[in-house]
Length: 301
Image (cartoon, rainbow, N blue to C red):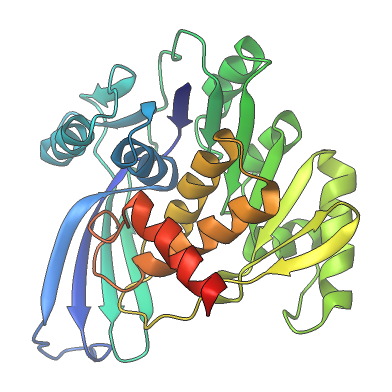
């Protein structure tokens, strides 16, 4: 089974502290972590870690950080044939402050004012394709050439490119922020009646399966005509960076391997939750067996 993750790649530098720094002061860091990041990029890394035949397609700069991203992929077994390194573009850098006292994260990002886009599309046939809304033209071409593939979009951020790709996939797995921005409505996780109209509009407009992620609360969807919030697990939070990306990578893995949708979401919830206990998106990715064992333990308890 061949997987393709297409979209955004960045390099994250995370600073761990026990309080949010005040302006014009010095702060002693308790720990730091540096690794690749980005929604589709992190999902590809997780799939490689879990033993999948996965390729990543995206653009980075032909610089130190771009080469580090390439090295990380190659070390975990992700195919980098379609990772472009552009001389005229800089790799996007994210500076992340992880506050261990309350589990919050603050992200500062540096990106070219006029970033380049992919000049070539991935070739070959893929069984599973995960997009994150970036590289719209290339994504459309790849989807058209792989009509039989399982097609998923990580609709995390509300952008025109993401919206335009949503009707072209089988599964729209979106953040509550995306859902609220698209529908211009607000939801209350405790009140089903505030979620239903948002879900129904997404379903009517995109005409596919909709899953709305609700962070620590879990995820909302419809299964066999029944609306459900599929819960996550409770864990102490050190750094939530990459948790959503890990959810999407795990969702893609379990769905592709024939798990029912509710079980797929449940296991993806667990994977994302386990990741927040450690610093750094890629350093926090759980092992596949760890996710399965945690699900078994939760069911026993």
